Image 1 (tube, rainbow, N blue to C red):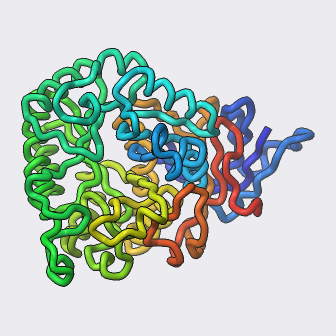
Image 2 (cartoon, rainbow, N blue to C red):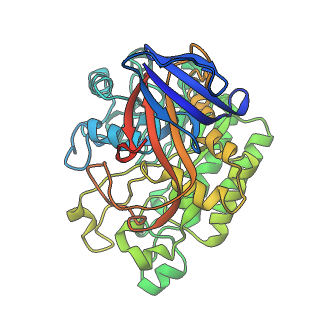
Length: 428
C-alpha cells in the first residue's frame, strides 16, 4: 500500500486542481480524501509526503526509439523504460525502425513481451511498409491483431502516394492511427541541419522547410480524401503548422506532435552543440519555433512527444555531416515544457500536462481514466518551481544538448501500476 499525502492534484481529464490525499492498493487508486481524512496508516504502508508538490496522471510519450531489437548498445527496452520513468512517463509508444523492423507479428511480440518486463506500459507501432522500404505494405490487419498501437515508418518518409493512400484506407478500417515522418529526401542535400543562415556559415546546403511541407500538404489532402486519422510527427516549420491548422478547420482528422527541442532551440544551436543539435527534421529559425509554440497554445499541435533517439558517443563524435541525427529527450521533456512554455506564459501548467497525458492517450484510442477512485495508479509527482541542473541520465545514451543546463520543473516520483518506478534521489 502506498499513500500520497497533501499533493496538489492536477487532472486535465477530470475535476481540475485540488489538494488531496490518495491511497493506492493493488495497482489502483483505492481511496481519495481531503487532506488528513484518510485515517491511521496501515502497518507496512509507504508514505509519500507530497506537500508543495503536484500530482498528475502519468505522462505518455507517443514517439520513442528504444533501439531494441538490433542496436541495444544505444538503448534497450529496459533502459529506455527507466529513462521514461525518470521523466514521469508511465506509457510510451515505440517506433518501428528497429533492426529488424517491426514489420512482423514475431518482432512486434518481442517488443511487447520485453516491455511487459519493465515497470511501465510499453506499446509499439508497427511499420507501414515491409522493411521500411516504402514499396509494399505490411500485413496491417495481422499486426493490429498482434497488438500494434498504430503504424509508422518513422525515420523514413513514404514517397509513393498510391501506397500511402492504400495504407490510410486500411488503417481507417482498423481504427488505428498512421504517423508520418515528413521529409522528402529528394529536396535535401544534407539532412539534420536547416537550410538557412547556419548552413551558409558552414558552407553546406542542408535541409529546407519545403522538404517537410510538401509531404504535410500531401498527407493532409489524402487524409481528407480517405477519412483516415493521421499524425504529423515532430513538426518543425511554420508553414507545416499552418497546413495542419487549415486541415483541422476543414474537418480533416489530422493531429500533430511537437518535440521539446523544436520548441526550445533554433538552428543556431548547431553552432554551439554540433552534432548534439543535429536531428531530423532539423531545428529551424526563431520564427518557426514561435509558430510551433503558437500551435501548441491554440490546439493546432495536439501532443508533446520527445522523439527520444539515443546514439553512442562514438557515433555522435563523428564529423557533423557523418554523425547520425537525433537526441535523447525523455528525462528533460517536462522540464523543457515548464521552462520554455509555462514560465513564459505560452501554456498553463494544466495545458502542458494535457498535451503529455490525455491528448496522447486519446490520439491512440486509449482509455484515460484520470485520477479517480478505482482508476489505475499511474501517476507522476513533480515540482513545477524547482530549478535543477541536468547532470546525468538513466538512458544508456547521453546525446543531449541540454546536459549541464539549468531548467525549471522536476519530476520527483513516478508511480505505475501502484508501484514506485522512479524516486528522485530517494528524497520524498
